[in-house]
Length: 130
Image (tube, rainbow, N blue to C red):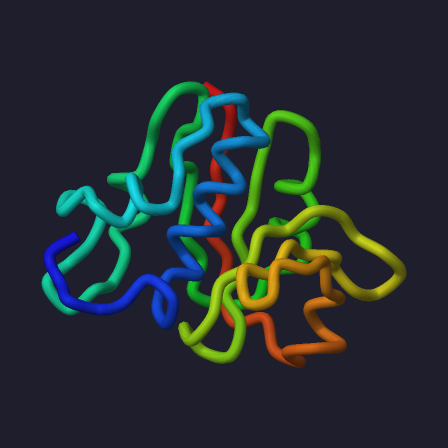
């Protein structure tokens, strides 16, 4: 984008979007997403509604925890990125397991139980299939 922020330290949103694009069948590598200045503000904040490609379309951004919306977006034809710890980290939601959500975590590249590991879901970003 328009900043000098390093991908390794600040790239969790780009990596989560990349993983989501693969699930929608329109894969874009994180470097391509991060390299597009239309996807980010000058401060490095992602402009979620500007990130659409192939079969993947922005639906909504929630700045609070809404478990019903998260669970709905885990269904086929939809996707959700979970924000944890007040905009400090983003993970791709995969499925619900008990009272927790299994997510692909760009930090470490593993599947994690998001509430067990990060404790607080503080928002979510929702995409749908075009």
